[in-house]
Amino acid sequence: MSAPPPALSTDLSGQVALVTGATSGLGRRFARVLADCGAQVALAGRRVERLEQVAKEIREAGGTALPLRLDMCDAAAVKAAPAQVEAGLGAPVSILVNNAGVPDAQRAHKMSLELIDTVFDTNLRGPYVLACEVARRLIEAKRPGRIVNISSVGAYHYAGQGAALYSITKAGIARMTEVLAVEWSRFHINVNGIAPGAFESEMMDGMLERMGDITRFFPRKRLGRPEQLDGTLLYLVSPSSECVTGTVVVVDDGQGGR
Image 1 (cartoon, one colour):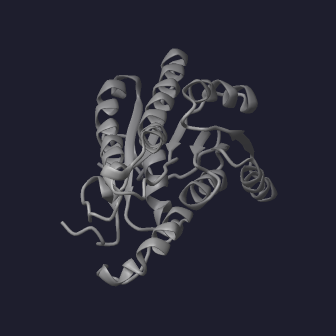
Image 2 (image 1 turned 45 degrees about the vertical axis):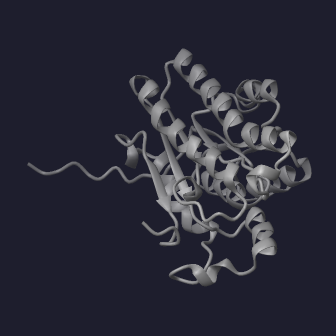
């Protein structure tokens, strides 16, 4: 018997993707990649001018983009976002990339309650609320979906550099990925995650300003580039990963050690 051809398509035509934190860095790259593969993309973030610029780039390349101002600390706005995307793009969100995140950049015992709330809400509570609302709407519509949550190697390895709460929330994202995959697998909603190491981004620029050149501690003496996550993202949202759910893929260039 001959084997069926491999399911390696990255054609996302007919899909509606929502990417949070799409104003810069990894989120911006994720949005562009999904659009290039045919998805209609909703771009969520707080900085409207940045969103409009990314949307313009996508449209000029022949894609479809919908900018959506969204503060992940505003639970009501987060819960309303999937309906807004559906109204703007004409179909339910079938791909969610929970990418928005903020660093704490302070020692744990020095953090204000306001900063603690901001980090928890942006990095964990907001993504959880959004994932649940996207899944609820897909379940009601009897449609499959893909959710990709962006964690961090900080969820597994902490270097003690003033990012304790960031690490805690990213560990929460990893566990959230695992348990929601169990809850929603019967509805054909795959929930997976990516745990990047140190990649070039606006957040990383701030870390380098505080800490200096951290790449000297890495085996390959370099930061990752956002485009080096393309393959992992596309694998997790395409037919190639049909049976993969509840998995967090570490992509760290060997930085985190094992």
